[in-house]
Each structure stands twice: as structure tokens, then as C-alpha cells.
Image 1: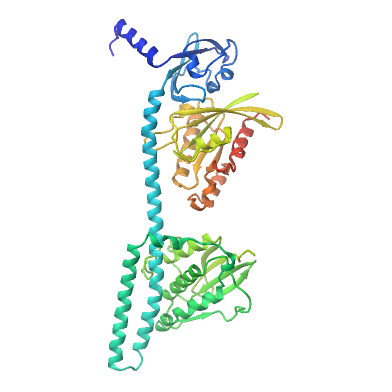
Image 2: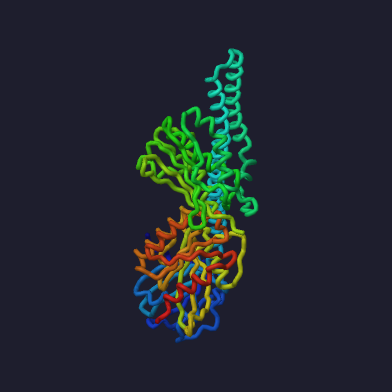
Length: 360
Length: 165
């Protein structure tokens, strides 16, 4: 750049002096103040003393000196006692300079833009999170409401195998058609009213409402029995379970039903004909351990890590949308429990979840 | 009394300014106000029989348009690395910042503070992620600028590492 004429330089100096309130401090090799000048008051620098350490008189300069020949600018430095300033650090033969230039205007302009940008960014992040939550909830409910229909349809199909009249068969077909239609309607209605169902995700945690695993499991087993019968798979509560004792857990009944239902349905999908799915319940150091054992082919090792992830359905896509086990995991973990699976020595897979008992 | 400069580093809106306000003035404001450049505060502490004055540089948070300028750390004896427990991405930013500090200023002492423990139900940074930080040698503290939990503890933990034995 060509040199500026003296008159232009003079004008620029006046401009800086008028609008940037310059001030300087000169610091020696020992870090002590040797000279100062300009509008030091504007930056809260009062009662300065030559010979005293600069960090004790201008605390924001602590640690910055000596500069060791390094020049730098730290923009928009603020303290409670002065204006925002750009701090220019300048090593020179006579010592190190700290030059302060008022940055009030720049700070204000940047703040407005930065504030807007950050708020928009935060809103976007919150929105994405909210959409994800609702999406998961919606899919879980669709998954759950579709469950009983599986039982109804299974019941109709079993009935169709009985010796019934032609007219009865027509009624059955109507029933099946209506069940399918209902399934579609459920999805559409839930999509339309997804915002309203969000409240369902809340869990009161009231110990008085703690569900009993065995009675809940019996209800689920009864509801799913037609589907199991249709597939020639036996579903049973482990005869070894002590049904005389209480198996209450810290949770909520409807969701516990859904967890059990999802795990049992999952077992059915992978069970061969003439095999058995067994629901067990065990005491595990004060917690309740629930097990669902199947006699299926087992879980391929490559599937195991993603089994409880969102949309983590098996390769063959026997699951519906891959949210059943994901729902089980987030629910059990929300109740401070654990969930997992392991191969059974005699073949098949054991899915299990452990829940604490309710606190009295 | 010895004086030590420390810095607060982290992604934008993790609560660095609120943590300083809680620690220095015992106050908390709900409204989010972005920091431009750096805000410098001072707080005296007593650790055992030693008095220490912390010069606290609260740096503007890192975002996609603005990187934290490493020259602000000149002369810093240590730093508080801050993340927001409800935003997992802020943990990645913290890791990246810690790496940049090490590259430019060497291995300075630091404490990793995960803010917003009062919103525990909304946390995205899980225990496993925090355990990984601990395994990497980080000192991790869960804190809340809103209710004060863990704030003084984190500053004192860092200060203790800066005091001569």
C-alpha cells in the first residue's frame, strides 16, 4: 500500500482519538507499569502506580506479559468497570505496550447479530429434538395399537379353520376386512393427532400404582394366545414362577404391558412351529428379573449391537418398523432398569429386563 | 496473594457466563445473552491456608461461524471446559477445543464441567460418554449454574491444581 500523506494520517489519528478513546499502558520486562496515558478512566483504570505489577492494577492483563516480541490483538475485551475494548499488545524497544481502543459500537453490532444467530440455532436444535421425540412416540403408539389387531385377526383366521357355514365364512371375511380397515384408520388418526398423544409419554412414578409383573404377563399372554395358536407356537408362564409372592415393579402398567407384549411378539416372529416361548420372573438381588425365552434360531452376531436401536429390525424385516425393542429399552431405562438378551445354551434366545421394586 | 488467569471454553449457549455469574456473584439469570469477545472477572478464594485470586476469562462460545480465538488463552494457567448436558454436540465441541488448546498452549490443567444438571431428564450426554471422558483422564463435574450445584466445586478443583504445593 502506498504511504498516506501526513495530512491524511493526521486526520485518521484525530478520528481514532475522537471515536475510539485510546489509552495505553507501558510495561517493563519485570511486568511492572512504567508509563500510561490517554483515556485510562474509560476502561476503569484509576489510581495507577508506576513500578507496581501491571496485573495487580489492571487485572485483565494478568499473565499476558512479557510479550516476548509477539504482537497480537484481542478483540472486544470487557470488564464490569469499563467499556468494551480492543486490546492491542505491542512489543517495542522501550517495553511492551497494552493499547486499548473503545469497541462499544462493534460489540453492540456484533452482539445483535450473534444473539440472533445463536437463538435461531438453538431453536432449530430444539425443534429437531421435539420432532424426533414425537416421531418416536407416534411410531411406538402405532406399533402398540396394531398389536391387539394381530390377536383379533389371528382369532378370525383360527375360526376360519373350523367347520362353519358359508354365511358364517362371509361374516368372517367382513370381520377381517374391518380389522384391516381399523388398522389403517388408527394410523391416520394418530398421525393427525400426534401432538395430543404426547402427554401419554409422561410417567407419574407413583409407588401405589406400581404394576405386578405376573398379573400383567398373564393378561398379555391371554391377549396374544390366538396369534401363537395360529403359528403353532406354545406361549406359557414359566411353571416354576412362585405366583404366590408379589412381583411389583417401579413402573407403569400400560407401558409394562407394551414392553412385555413387544418382547413376546418379537419372540413369536422368530419361533418355529411346535416350539415354546416361556415368560419367567425371578428375584435378582432385590430387583425383579423378567425373562422371555424362545427356541428360535438365535440372533445373528451382526444384528446384536443394533437390536435395541431405533429402526433396528432384523434383516428379514419380520418386525414391523423396528421400534418395538427400541421402545422397550427407553422405557426400561427410564424406570432405572436394564434390558438385554443372551443366547440360551439349549438354543434360542433369552430376552430379559430387570426393574427395581417400588420404594415403600 | 497469588493471581492466576483461567479461561472458560465451550460451545455457544452452554452456560459459561451463567457459571461465572453464579461463582463470582451468586446470581443466575434465565435469559440467554450471548458473549461477544471475552468478559473478564475476578474472584478471590481461600484454599486451605492459601489465598488465590482467579482472573476469569469467559470466552465467547464456539459456533459454526466463529471459532474460539486461541490467543485469548495467552498466560492462562488452566481452563474450565464446559458442555451442556442437554446437547450432545457440545461434548464434541469440548473435545475439539481441548485438543486445540493442547496444540497451541500445551497440556494445561483443566476441569470438564457438564452444565445444566437441573435438567437431568433432558440430558443427551449419557453416563457412558462421561465415563469415556474420565477414562481419558478428564476430571468431570456435573453442575448447574441455575441452582449452583457443583459450580464452586469445579472452580476450586481447578484452582487447587494451580496453587503451588
